[in-house]
Length: 460
Image (tube, rainbow, N blue to C red; front, side, top):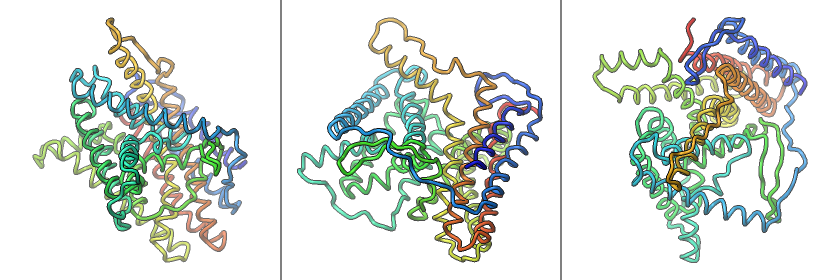
C-alpha cells in the first residue's frame, strides 16, 4: 500500500508540473505551466511503469478485502426507499417522453435531451463508479416487467435465455447508442428522436423480458451491463444482507476487478467501454477532423465515414487486446488464451472509469443544472431560472483533474492486473513476465489518453 501511495504522489507531482494546454470544451482559453506536454506525458507513463515495477518487486497480491460495514438500513426502510426510487424514475422517464414528443423541438430548450443523455446515461454512470450500480432499482423496463408479472400472478418467461447469446445484445446496444447515436448523430440534440429512441428501446426490453425473463435484463440491457461493470471499481458499495437489510461498505477500487469476466461477450463489452470514451475524445481532435474530411471527399460516403471509422477503430482495439493476451500467455508459459482474456479484461475497467469521469463530469453537472432549470420552468409563468453547477470549475482545474484522474485510473488498473497475475501464475517470476505486456499496454494508453484530452485545444 505504501508503494501505491507513492505512485499516486508521483502522479500528483506530474499534474502540478503540466505543460502548455487548454482543456477539452471548457472555457475556450489557454493557460501555461512550467513544463511542456511531452514531459507531462513521459512523467505519467513513468508513474504507471514505476508502479508496476514496485508491485513486481513485492510479489504480493494487493489486498482487496472490504472493511467492516459502516451502517445498515432496516428491511422496511430499504423496501420503502427502493419502491419510491423505482416509481419515481419510471415517472420521470414517462415525463421525459412526453416532453420529447410534445415539448419544444429545440434540444437546448427541452428537458428531455438534458435528462436522457446527461442526467440519466452519464449521470447514473458516475453514480455507479462511485457507489455501485443502482440500475436494478432504477431500471424502468424491469419495473414494467414486474408490474406485468404481478398482474399475471407469476414471473413471465416464455423461453430460456440461450447461453450462446451471452452479453452480445448489450454489446450491440452499447456500440449503437453510446458509440454511434451519442457521438456521431444529432439524436442527442433532437427531443423527438430522443423520445422515440426511449420508447423503442423500452419496447425491446419489455418484450425481451416477457420472452426470456429476468435474465434478459441482466445480459441484454446495455445500461445494466455498463453500470454493473462501472460498479466494480466503486470504492463504496451498497449490499443486501440475508435479513434483507441494506449495508454500506468500503472497499479498495481494484477489488471488483480481480473477478474474471464470465464470457468473451462481456470481455468485448469491457473493451468497448474503454474504446467508446476514447473515440468520443478523439472526435474532437484536429487529427480526426482532418481524417474525416479527407475520407469524405475521397470516398463520397458522407457522414457514414465517421461510423466506419468507429467500427474499424473498435475492431482495432479488440485485435490489440487479443494480441496482448497472446503475449501474456506466452510470457507466462500458459497457453490458455481464452481463460487469460477473461481474467485480465476486468483489470482495464479502472481506465474506462477514470477516463469517463474525467471526460464528462463537468458536462453532467452543467447539463443537470440546465435540466432542473427547464423542468422548473414548466411549472412557472416567468423565465427559466439560471442554475449553474460549474461556476467553480476553472480551465486549469478541469485540465488538472483530468490528468490526475487518468493517471490514477491507470495506476489502479496496474494494481488489479498485478493481483490477477499473482493469482494466476505459480511463481512470482512467471507473474512478472506475464504482467509486462499489460504494463506496456497501460503505459502506452496512459500517454494516448492524455494526448487525446489535450489535442482539441493544444498548440505545441
